[in-house]
Every structure is written in structure tokens, then in C-alpha cells.
Image (cartoon, rainbow, N blue to C red; front, side, top):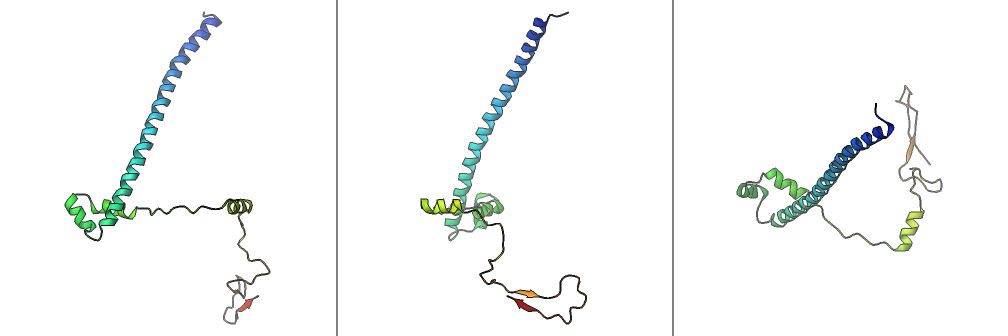
Amino acid sequence: MATTEEIERRIEEADAARSAKRAAAAKRVGELAQLRAEVAEKLGDIERELGDVLAKSSDVISVDELAKFTDVPATDLTQWLNGRKTTRPKRKRSTATAKRDASQAPSTSNTTPATQPSASPQLAGPRNGATDTSTRTLTPVT
């Protein structure tokens, strides 16, 4: 029968081998995920550039012609052309405006304050379940 020290040593050996395998797997997954992110970013850049070139050249050559000349499917060319995002510089906000906006909680209610008239008139009439609607007259509610 093994002593308690021998049992502990055996467990540590078994755990060390498993821990090394786990660490190697985690390391490899991390490396591959990083590589994938870099390649995806590069692919996105290439697709944006393709879209830009397609847009700039659309006055001299059509997507169908490009597909014919390049053997690139027209659906792919159209996808790149339509997938372009127009980038606009973000508007800088003053610090005072940013602080004011941050301090104001977004309103979750969709009601008009009592002091302001409603932009769209509400109509009064029978509620759901009314059977005779032929004599119903609608009157604006103020």
C-alpha cells in the first residue's frame, strides 16, 4: 500500500502532465485566435479597398464587365461594392456638452408632457369589444 507522501507525489506528477497539456492547448488557441484577428482585419481592409476601387471605376466599367474580364463572380463584386462603409469623421463634442449629456438619463417613457399638446391627435371612441361601430363618431382629445 502506498504512503500518503507517495500518493501526493503521484497526484502531482499526473497533474503536472495534465497542466502542461492544458497550458500548451490554451497557448496555441490564443496564438491562432490572434492570427485570425489579424487576418480578418487585413481581409476587411482589402474588401474596403475593393469596394472603393469598384465605386471609383463604376463610371468607366460595370460590375458585369469586371466579372467577365477578371473571372471574379459579379455577386462577389457587388457585395464588395455595396459593403463599403462611408467613413465620416466623428464630430468632436465639447466637454460641457459631453458632461451634460452624461448627466441626463435617457427617457424611457414615450409620453408627451401635459403642458405640450400632442403632435398627433388622439381620437376618442368605443373601446375594444364594442359591437356597433356604425354610429361611432371620433372626436379629437385635447
